[in-house]
Every structure is written in C-alpha cells, then in structure tokens.
Length: 321
Ligand code: CP
Image (cartoon, rainbow, N blue to C red; front, side):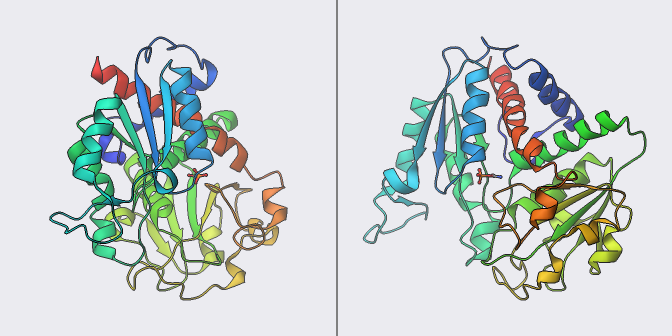
C-alpha cells in the first residue's frame, strides 16, 4: 500500500480486516516492523480517537510517532497555487510539505472541509497538496470528504460481530441521518457508504430527510429510503450519523428530533447493533437509552480504531521495504 486516502488504496478489504483482527489478538506480533521509522501525525483540527489510536498503533509496530497540532502550533499554511501571501497565511504547503517529508517516513494528516466551498472541499485540495509535495506515503486521518480509518474500523467491527454471532447471511446495514446542533461534514457518511459498497457483503440502506442526499459518487449501489421507520425494518446494524446538506452545500435544512434513534425505533430492527463514530451529542444525535443500552457497540468500535490503524501502517511499512 503506497498511501491510504480512500478505499481505492486497498487491494483486498477482507484481507485488511483479517489483518486488523489478527493484530487485535496479537498487538505486538510485528514489534520490529517499524523499528527506526518515524510517523508524523499532523492535525489541522481536533481529535481524540484518531490521534491516540494511531499513536498506539504506531507504538505497537515499534514506530516513533510525533504529533504536531498544525492549527494551534504551526504557521498558518497557504494552499493556493500562485497565492500572493500578503494576508494571514505565513508558509506555503509547497515549502512545508517537503520538509515534513524529510523528517518522517510516513505522514498522517487530518484536515476538515470548509463547508463553504464545495468545489475546493470535494477536490480534496488540502490532502492532495500534502501528497503532491511530501514525497513520503500519506495516511488520511480524515480529509474534506472521507474518513477511511473510521470506515475500515466500522467494517472490522461488523465482521468481528458477525463472527461472534456465527452469522452466515448478509447483514442489513442502515446508515441513518440524525439531528445535530451545527453543520457537520459529510466525510463519515460518504466514507461509510463508499466502504460498504466496495465491500459488497451487506444489504445497504441509507435513510435521511429529503434534501440531505449525499454525493452519488459514494452512495451509488445503496438503497435510499426517506422514511426512517421503513428503512430500519429488520436492520442488523444501524449506523447513526449527522451530516449537513451536500447539494445546497453545508447547510442545516431541518433538525427534526424525531430522527434521533430511540429504543422504540430499535424495536423495528432485527435487534440491531448500533454504531456511531463518536464524538456524539447525547440526546440530540443518539439517546442515552441507546448509548448506555445493550445494543450499542460504539465503545468496541472506537477501540477497534487501533487495529485499523495498525493494519494500515503495517501495509505501508511492508511496501516501503
Ligand atoms: N471518530 C473520530 O474520528 O474521532 P476523533 O475526531 O476524536 O478522532
């Protein structure tokens, strides 16, 4: 694996999932693989899970991880080609990225979308500039449109749970929109749709209010149902997530609290397991009764972030040998 930006960088999803589950059972099996190697974790936005799970994963492989909160501690970066830098930005990505590439064997980067300029966000301008100028493998810790480490984790969690249940048939997975107090990116929902579609081992339904349609480049292949109750029928997994509008970009159109998942709605499902990437706004996106109840697997899911990151870093280190 040369980089990890989307599912398109993965040759075999099931093999990567198995590798992650192997590391879950044997965290230090490849303790020597990353010896003498260094990963730079660059954050242009806050993080709890992504930052710490990737540090733990690197440590399990014997790699040194150095975190740099670019947004708080670095010079303000300029990404525009040909910019006249007389404004607030101090350093061009063209100058910064090759230096970072000379310090690290792998660069991992979290950027977020502006939610103002759809064209810029969906061109993945920020992470693509790092890839262009860094000269070392780049791992996405969430970009403007995708969150591949989260989605790999989600497939790992579903597979792990299927093994525990000795499931033979395809699960029904429902991605449901949920209310939120502020406009959030489409990254997690886009990425989850992209991975479930590429994985191809589930009946996949997406439910959201009208006008919250996601980009078809990620959802194509899924069934879209606007009636949440109908969508939830017989679901084995319900993935809850808010996102802002895609077409009229970055807006909140409705915030109907009836879209929050409750135990009553869970009755419609096949005793579904409930997933969320976290952080979650309790009793806005998801009710206490669900999060604290027996169907929630959000803590296991977040724990699996380590094994997803470890599997990806292992693939990258092996391809650099
Ligand atoms: N799910 C996730 O990416 O969490 P953080 O934003 O805390 O890293």
